[in-house]
Amino acid sequence: MKAASNTISRIFWALTLASLLLPATKAFADGDQPPDHIASLSFWIIAGIALYSYLALSVQIIARKAETPNDWFAWIPIANMFLLLAVAKKPLWWFFLLLIPFVNVVIVILIWMGIAETLGKPRWWGIVTLIPLVGFIVPGYLAFSD
Image 1 (tube, rainbow, N blue to C red):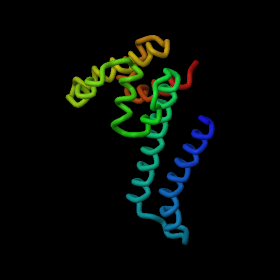
Image 2: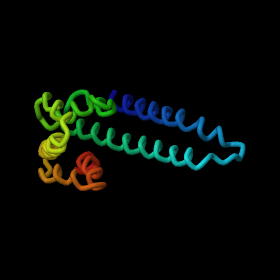
Image 3: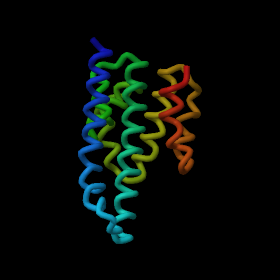
Image 4: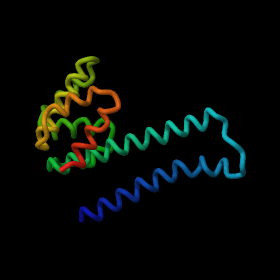
């Protein structure tokens, strides 16, 4: 049953992405070149969707590894933070600490340290999230490593 659910989910996301990209490609099919700002905006939108998809898929796989219920919360913007708190075994009221500037940086590190510990990885992986660009590797490593 889960395999069918995963397949349906992947088909849904592929169709959603195609419906977003199809009008943009059709508009310029007659050979007209889009203005530079539209091409740049399109690039950043596609890059943002790809990054969000990577992070959401990584969090969903992490939740499955930790056997946390409702792993599909990873795809919902605010609910994914509650899912991360559940995986890290932290209290749900910590969500309000994520809304406080500067405090949220410490809380995010503690959450990722808890997630790494839950998955049997060293806790220092939570600190690695502070390093720019390298911090995006942490969810993928925790999700796709054994």
